[in-house]
Amino acid sequence: MRDKKELVQNLKNSGYLKSQKVVKAFMEIPREGFIPKESRDYAYADQPLPIGHGQTISAPHMVAMMTELLEPEPGDRVLEVGGGSGYQAAILSKLVKKVYSIEVDPELVSFAKANLRRVGIRNVEMILGDGSEGYPKEKPYDKIIVTCATPKIFDSWINQLKTEGILLAPVGRGFYQELIKIRKTKKGLEKRNHGGCAFVPLRR
Image (cartoon, rainbow, N blue to C red):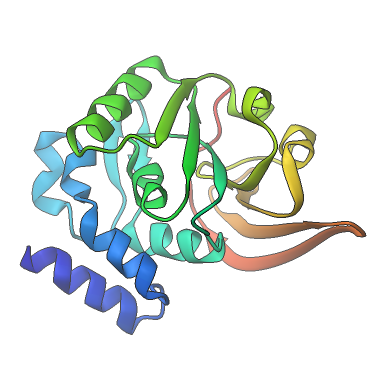
């Protein structure tokens, strides 16, 4: 699809897409398969789009940026907090061993499951639940990605993250947040701020 190729090229030119493996994942996953029919004409515009229930699918540049910052590896087991329509999980599914994606809205869980099934993805498990609690059943995780605005980094996430694991989350209570990357080391937590962003709030 020409629009997808143009978007991916623009994301590469802008520095959001850095690695060939993430470029490949973007090319393999159809973003139009994760948004409602009425918005599909805008699937490859670099903007967030509504997916119903007051939620959005993130703009492609933000998905690209967060995917690269997460440093996905083929053997990783990843927890995603805020599953939405399943698009971020779908991108990660091409890069890691398994994604556990937790979402509080039951209708969005059903929507995401249908979307993932339709595009043939089998290594993502959609879970209905409170993302602030993580998903202790499958801990520990190599990586944790939070795709909704969180007022803080919850202890549950840190406790469920492996040593040397990475946690990525938009942190803040207002309209804008700061994208924080945390690496859990034996000596403690290494934190780095990757700038401003805007996500819908974490719901519990």
